[in-house]
Length: 478
Ligand code: NBP
Image (cartoon, rainbow, N blue to C red; front, top):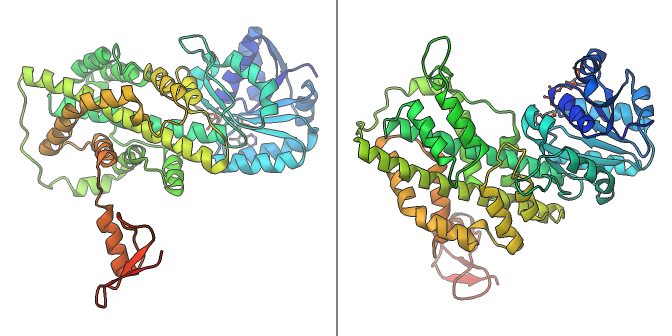
């Protein structure tokens, strides 16, 4: 065969990735369970590059140059296993199966292990950027063996988005499931970013009394500063949009129930297993879940809240500026938590992930792309063992400068009855990390009281237990 890569699964993502490879000069073999999709692609876009359409698994495999690179872009889960089982027996040692779907990283670890025994490189690749990204340049997070990256990497670098400094938004993240793990956390951070933006909108609407158009203007302005990002940009576009049917602001005619596909939930589930406090991401997942509980919400409509206190124009403008500070500070916390999770995953699974490179490849192509990520890259590049993003001098200074306004916003939200779980959780995280002493001392003492779970002391080594049911003397077990 002559094709440098083959793509099977030609729905929106697979089709656009195949076109992206072809537009970059590669010969691309095409395959899809339903052959009509393959024919459609060639009819509509065949002149964009060199395609080899095929209609059977055998024909597809035969079209690939050796060692073969076969990319799967089908629905994650059972369909991915079915496709692997269909193709693996047709492959030879040294060939690569590349899974660009949204697989759970534990599935990727299992598949990599099983295929390694058969001599096949299984490369789990996180792809972010939606269908537009897939066509014009996504952010690509490949795992798998370093050998597989030697030949696949340059191809991914060609089709990936380019950061403002020109570097491709892809890098070898680490072995087996590392790429899908990092993609998962990317999506968790995306949930948190979106929740924080939603809270800022809610406050500007309910407390400052701004119209959606005025809020769109505010976001456009924020997008010229340190919050410059894709999500802020599209938020302004959504808020400025008028529903053509009713003539009302579009945001007012959309049902207020946020759905989810699962990567945010996975991030939180895995964070719980790893023992990493990702409270901002968790609140974002819970906020979507709460919005969907219509029955609960309807049953609660008559619960009392505070009397609204409208702001005059000058106070509203001052408040909006404070909301920008709160949003920025909370965003720093979300990324601090997300990168903590990536480090913890890397340590647990021996992936040796370079955090600066992760920030670097999120600068373009993906949904959370933002000017801010270049600063995160700089922070981790300067010090790979940075205990936390909050220990970076520049971020520490910025969050310190924002904290008065951040507190004022959270206090106003509480007083005015506007839910801000993201802002509030981020502030609580910040204050808990700052605290010299946490009430965890009391929690641990309680655990010793009812369960003899023992405690450590501040003044001596060892573990201790107080005879709570007896004379309350202390026994050392250290
Ligand atoms: P879908 O997730 O909707 O999957 C449709 C494709 O899967 C079709 O090609 C379909 O073939 C194939 N397929 C299914 Br379903 N079951 C199959 C089976 N048992 N055997 C063989 N093929 C099967 O497509 P998508 O939205 O293009 O997404 C592809 C992957 O990329 C997913 O894993 C998704 O999570 C991931 N992803 C999506 C985005 C995005 O923005 N949409 C972004 C990043 C990653 P058929 O044509 O014969 O039905």
